[in-house]
Amino acid sequence: LFYHLQRDHRFSEPRSRFYTAEMASAIGYLYLLNIVYRDLKPETVLLDSEVLKKQPCDRTVDWWCLGTVFYEIIYGLNVSEMYDSILHRPLSLPVGTSSVVCDMLMGLLQKDQHRRLVSYTYAQLKVKKPNFFSPINWDDLYYRRITPPYNPNV
Image (cartoon, rainbow, N blue to C red; front, side, top):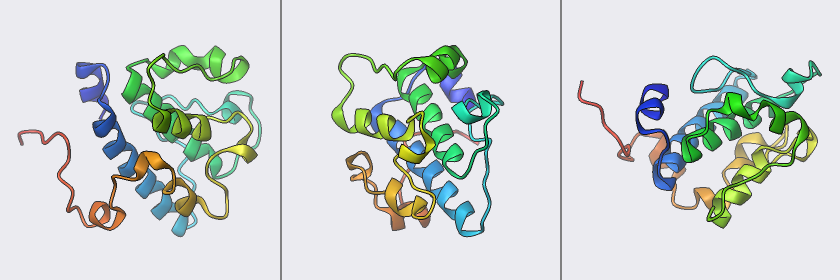
């Protein structure tokens, strides 16, 4: 993911939706195993506001990280440039952002972990409900029946 993001700088909304759904599905599975991942990103920088402030965190940290990765892949902005915004500014989205992308990002990137799109108890269920994911058939995604938007030559 990081290689292609570096090469292409940003992804289209459908490509971003696919990869974000894949990551959301993986997080949901980890939670079924009672695992908090805490390190989701295209590279090795964890940018959750609780972590930056050295505050306690819970499962919502992974959904924040999903939001930062989604932001980076759809806008092409290196998330490391977002530190000040993460800690001190309201979320700013480029003009022309679709309402479904806006709702998804605003929900995932809530500074208050208790107001994030995904709750601790119903994590996997609530992240799947936003309109952003309406084109995704979660069973097809799980069973790999969806063709990825990019297939590398291997």
